[in-house]
Image (cartoon, rainbow, N blue to C red; front, side, top):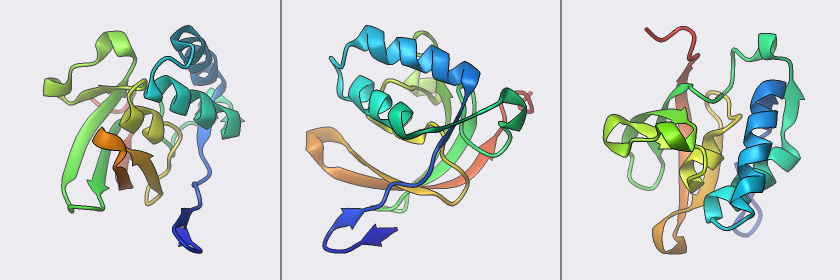
Length: 136
């Protein structure tokens, strides 16, 4: 939700203990060298950690996510993956990209802003999340 004069309140995000460990190592290895690594580290700092058995209502590594780009109304279906598994042509985006780091931990209907190409502010709304264990 937008608040005040152009400030955006970030939504609460959740991360499993397992994802937290993997993502912490990734953001440390990146050393803040990329915008995605810096954003991921910031997101992890504010995330609420939960047990794996409570990871059914938010974006985790491997989740299939449908979101709407608020600026143009375009809907995208992506899978959030580790960098080694990323393939933009197949709809698999790395958690170390700005949009990927922004997705981690979000719940359905949450809105988040991130800086896109040329540092242009972008906003997306999460429409649906499919647990990676439930996708065939």
